[in-house]
Structure formats: structure tokens, C-alpha cells
Length: 92
Image 1 (cartoon, helix red, strand yellow):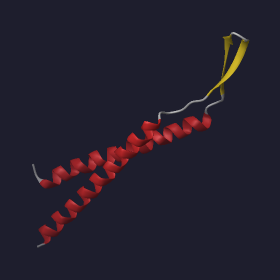
Image 2 (cartoon, helix red, strand yellow; image 1 turned 45 degrees about the vertical axis):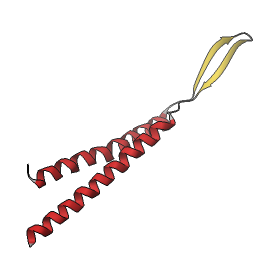
Image 3 (cartoon, one colour; image 1 turned 180 degrees about the horizontal axis):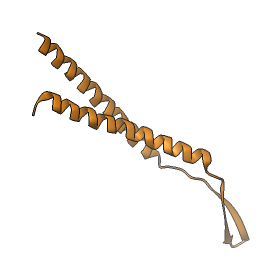
Image 4 (cartoon, helix red, strand yellow; image 1 turned 90 degrees about the vertical axis):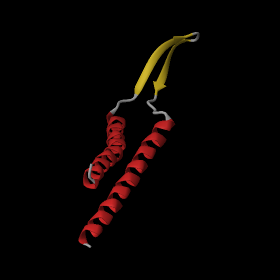
């Protein structure tokens, strides 16, 4: 397997790692902007009560997405440097 093919695979993987968290964040932002306030009525000892139901994501999801994004950027940088070095070696 030649170096160019390996670098193309790395670039594809890193672009997926960069774009998936970005796309997920955009979808969640659109969902947050257009969702309606959710109130739920339920019976308690005191009688009928209304509770505001807020949608929230786990905090770990932010760190997982950020970690995947940063790993993708690092791999993309590595592939760019390797491709640059490969091209300079071919010119000699």
C-alpha cells in the first residue's frame, strides 16, 4: 500500500471525526431553537401540579464531541505534514 493511499484514508477519517461533532451540534442547536416549552401536569399529594420539563444533554457529551473534533484536527494536521514532506521528497 503506497503512502498516498494511506494519507487519503487518514484525511477521510479525520474529516469524519471533525464534521460529525459539528453536524451534531448544529442539529441540537436547531432543535433547541425551535422546540416549545414543555409543561407536564401530574398528580401529587397536594393535587394537580404543573412541572416545567427542560431538555438537557449530559455534560460528558460536550467533552466527547470536543475530544473527537480535536483528534480529527490533529490527524488532519499530521496527514497534511506527511503529504507536504512526501511532495518535497519527490521534487528532489
